[in-house]
Amino acid sequence: MLKINIICIGKIKEKYFSDAIAEYTKRLGAFCKFTIVELAEEKIRDNIPNQSQISEVLLAEGRSILKKISPSDYVVALCIEGQLTSSEELSKTLDSLALSGKSTVSFVIGGSYGLSDKVKIRADMRLSMSRMTFPHTMARMILTEQIYRAFEISTNGKYHK
Image 1 (cartoon, one colour):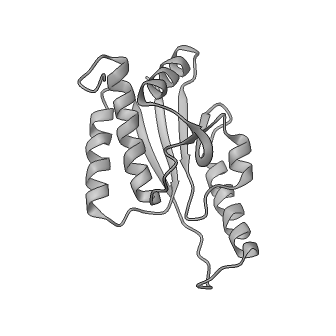
Image 2: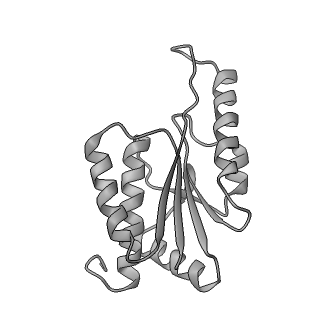
Image 3: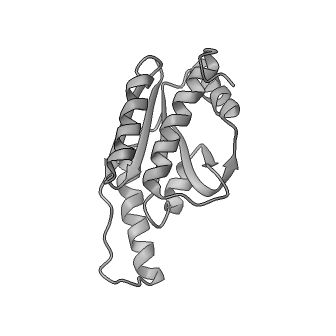
């Protein structure tokens, strides 16, 4: 059974996002071993951070993300410069990875300032959810739903189209 991780920075404060993620997590149990790994968000003391402070945050968060990734993981970094894909294409990608012998797929969602270059370099795939910008907590909920949808598509379930 494929293992799917979402490695992300920060905690979800909104109950409606937590409830939706919990529902899709429960549903995903039929298809994969699904885990969300929440890592601490680095804090900046200034209200208006400079580029040096942002770089430090990205490096620190990147180090904590990379510690959670195994060398054998297939890593998907969610970033604005990533490729746009459809639900059907994501389904085919997950099927292909499972058939090629990959046992773990780790999706990575950065913090407020994105992902460090080191995380992006480690990624096997860079994925953009949309040309629009979403809060990271919403992106986590949408990604969880899309992973569920991908499995439903591959099994011709109720979300097959």
